[in-house]
Length: 189
Image 1 (cartoon, rainbow, N blue to C red):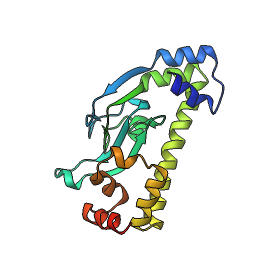
Image 2: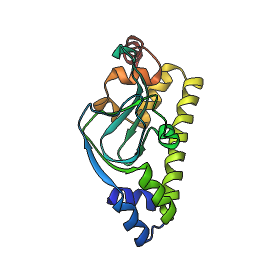
Image 3: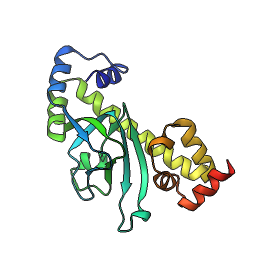
Image 4: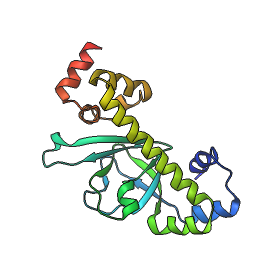
């Protein structure tokens, strides 16, 4: 709980009453390595804060080699199929723990109560929305403005730990190339 409090208090001071109400709504969940914890066509009912681990955001396909990975989330970040969470309609993608992952989750219903009864709820909603927007915007700009090699280099300058925990097939999908093209890029570097 201290991790999420430290993260939130970088932005604003949280009153003891708001903190007590908010934390009473959080549920700690441990997701096993490789487990999908939001499946395609399920309605996202949680916003979660990652205490430890790595989560992949992807569009599944019948052929697993054709899956499209379009995001990763790490320790001290929020994770959610946020569009499904906001609209309460089925998700068009899945969330998968790539490592054993510990998250603190709040349900849609409980977050509405936090919004209604505290000041921190709006902060959490805003931080989550801003983070997800910035990730989406950055990814779109990278895909439009950088070569595959530049996207790969940028990814590992920003997140060098990725090589240790994320399979290359997910990385190749994330930067928008085939596994073979990624192999050629890596040989050149």
